[in-house]
Length: 320
Image (tube, rainbow, N blue to C red; front, top):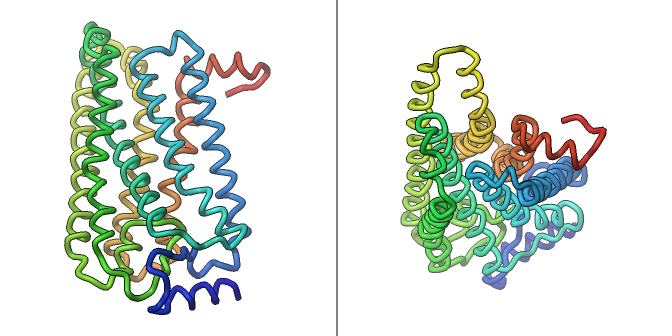
């Protein structure tokens, strides 16, 4: 009844244009309490995993290397992504707290878009790290200095901000004279665009360009890096050396798949899956924001020996 009351108020043309309402998962409202259990569990695992990863990298001097600096940046990005969305999503599931101001909505959207873009850029930087480590190992320490790593991180951050900052401003210029109900768990860009009663072609085109530019360009360079890595590894003399070299890339390859597959699936279904149920769209969109932050610490903790050894010291008697 409370949801129906909120939605009827939000749908009236005289309602406050500065206030919007999030629906949660459309079609599965009755199951919100049950759905909150896996969502909360994944969020908790993401927080604990990434905080533990940051602590291990900070306190273990042997991990003060380029690959682990990039991994620390990835952990920070994953923490920001999960904390930007999950508290509000859980408040919808648990307390039916659906109201969000338009300004808060735009801020949330900016953080989601910019840090997703930043994560893509960082995965590209980590691909460059693996390329140098395998194709030019003797110069690894001289190429990837602390200064270079900082510059790469700042460049990725600058690109993310420059590409995504126009989107909230493009949304702010539009009139919202009809429904103020966002059919989503959070302020997803296209879900907000659909509420505008003005011409949204600029928003649509710019959104598509940003996605294609980020995913297309980053993936192209990542694939190119791994083609070169593959050539270098296959040129090694023994199978043992080849397996060892491939092993250094295993965690990064898993992180790439964990991040890009849900993004590509969600974008494809959103653009072309017109017959797919709305709740599937929303679940996938939540999945690609929550699954990578939860899985990245697990993947790197299990597959990276230095981190695994340090975790064994932190948790004696546990096996990873």
